[in-house]
Image (cartoon, rainbow, N blue to C red):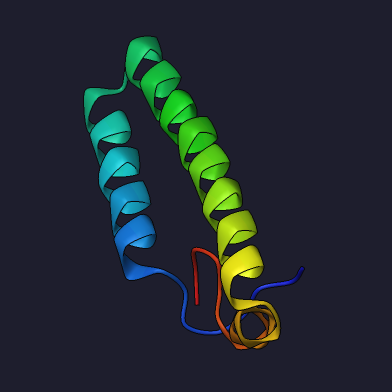
Length: 72
């Protein structure tokens, strides 16, 4: 499913925060933590989307068509 629209401000804000910390520290360890954060976030989002599709069906599908997953 393709997402577009408003995005999720909490996920977008977390991504920007951790990206900033990674660039500020500028170490391979911070890059590793940032990559792990992205992987965990994607697993969580995909799991939540599956549940929401099950709970709300077409209403959630319509929401996905007009709303971004992470970014506007």
